[in-house]
Amino acid sequence: MISNQLSFLTSSWFPSRCFICRHLLHVDEQSICQVCLQSLPRAHTAELTKLYILGALIDADFVSALIFTDPVNTICYGLKYGDHPRLGGTMGHHVLGPFLVKHLKSTHRTTSTIVLIPMPISKRRRFQRGYNQCHSISKGCQKALAKAEIHGVVLPLLKKEIHRKSQVNFSAIDRWSNISNSLRVRKKKQRIPKDALLVVIDDTVTTGSSLFHAGETLRKNYPENALVLASLAVEI
Ligand SMILES: [Zn+2]
Image 1 (cartoon, rainbow, N blue to C red):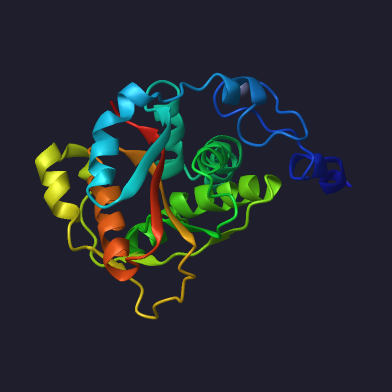
Image 2: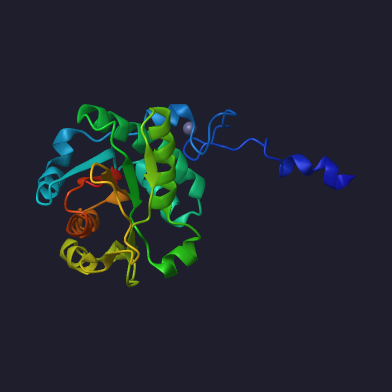
C-alpha cells in the first residue's frame, strides 16, 4: 500500500529539474530546459582561428559549438564527473547535432554518410565513469542528423591505449605531447565508404591536441575520407 502511494517517486513521469536553472522540466525536455539551451554562449569564428589552422594541417575542418564559460563549464564538468550520461545525449541532440547539420549544409555534405566517432576514453576511466560522455554526445548528434534527414552512424573507431592521470593540472605542452601515440584505430578496421564523412566528437577542446591526434590517426588509416573534428565547447 505504502509502496503504491510512493511509487510516483520512481515513476518515469516524475518531473526532473533543469541541470542549470533547477526549474521543473517540461515533459518534452530532458536534462536542460529550452530557455537555458537557447542562452548557452555560442562560439564565433574569431575564437576558433587557432583551431582552423590546426585542422588545416591534416586537411580537416575543426569546429566547436560553444564557449567554455559559465554555465558550459558546469555542463562539461557534469558530463565528465557528475554521472550524467543523459546530459550528453541532450547536448548532442540540441546543441552539437544542430550545429553540425548547419555546418554540413554550408559545406554541401548532407548527402554523405556521416560517421560519428566518439573520442575514446581509457578502459579504466570508462569503468570508473560508467560511460563515455563523447559516445552519449555522438548518439544525440545522430538524432539531430536523422531529424534533418541526414544518414549518420555512431562508430567507436578509435581506442585509447594507455591510462594516464587526469590532464587538469598539466601544462599545455605536457598535454600536447602526452596524447600523441596513445590513440589507435581498433584492430578490426571497419570498411568505410570513401565518400563518408568522418566526424570525431569530443566534449571540450583546450589546446586541440587530443582532437588533432585523433584526426591524424584517422587520416593515416582513411586518407581519402573528408574529416571534421567537432567539440561541444572550446576553451579560449
Ligand atoms: Zn533551465
